[in-house]
Image (cartoon, rainbow, N blue to C red):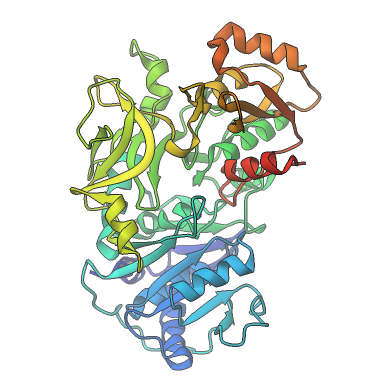
Length: 503
């Protein structure tokens, strides 16, 4: 079944419901969104000769046209290639060429003006008008729908192949484990629609709820607070760093979350101190998910009741977990030999189920390495407790080995974040001739506060083993982040190697 059928069915059932807002302005009802999708699909076929299976790339910020263009591609049985809007054009060009995209849509239509062989079109372009309303093209469940390129932190990006069935199963997991979409909701796209935030649109479409693209077309704390107060029933995905900044802005305004129904957080570590502060400010509005592009948004979940719970004897530990396996998948923590590890033992997190990718585009070797014996090997380290709650330790590539001993950066980061002067922190390992690696902490202070190296060192000695404490501190104004708000430790390692620091 074509995933675009959900828009077709909802628009025929509830044509007058509001479908798409830009800020406070209603742009389209569901009937109008259906008509414009059919118009654009006809234009794609006439202008670009788009056929089933063709790839169409989108290299643009969030915009009202994004959902329409996605569905117009699927209407024809084509494949979407969403590209992180913050990539350099050269990086985007690599993805466009690797995916063999028939066309690429950008905000201006002039990003690749010096590359005449790239078929570039403005996101707003759509020549057809008042086409006949037709159902989406029939496709098989295993047909490719979404070709998502990984960040390429360990080499060139890899194209994750997600099928229509993958997307449908992901959406069913959303309904089972994350949130129950309601027709009165406004799904806010403050995080990039090229990533998981965009994938969550399917549940909202099926429920006949509205989609809200901020006027800024991105994340802005004050704008979100204003929209919550005016529109209400906001539901949105946010990276932990976004939540942290939203809570800071809310406390400054005396705002307590009115008009926000659900915030789904994931995409990076949510530190215990940060979620505790968020709950104190907003109350039980938070759901945590853990996933990756290879099994989008669907490894584990910690529902709002579990996030907020204080009745269980181990509620604090559970709140620090990433929850239990989502309903469509199986979880395991495996050792280096591929066998399951006992409860509490740290190993590689592996997952299997109908949400797992088909493989990597044109990369059978990487596919074989990631998909072994039916399991997707995530590259993340963690352990399961006796109740099946999953705890992330770190990315396997982020573990610091000093003097032959493993040091997990997250433990050091959690410790430093409990210091009242520390706002954000990232811990990395830097090569050191005697010990192999040494622990380096990049620290952002709370506004108007600071602490000395000796004070932070003393703090760490009080809370963690001495060998884990940072041997060097860099005090910075901000940490480098991607468009999802995830801290880029690879960039910090590069800066550390070159002797430069972020500003």
